[in-house]
Length: 60
Image (cartoon, rainbow, N blue to C red; front, side, top):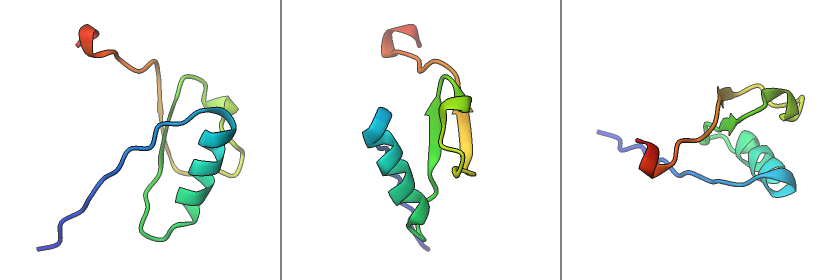
């Protein structure tokens, strides 16, 4: 049985864009962009998008 590891990388702005690009180019990565405004994502990103405001631990 193959175990799949997941890693979350949280970054915004320039650094977030660079991380997203690097993950998109990695053959074993499946990047998911979490954002409030999908229109602000780079035009080249064709992966899964989760739109909305991140929930804080105290809101759960």
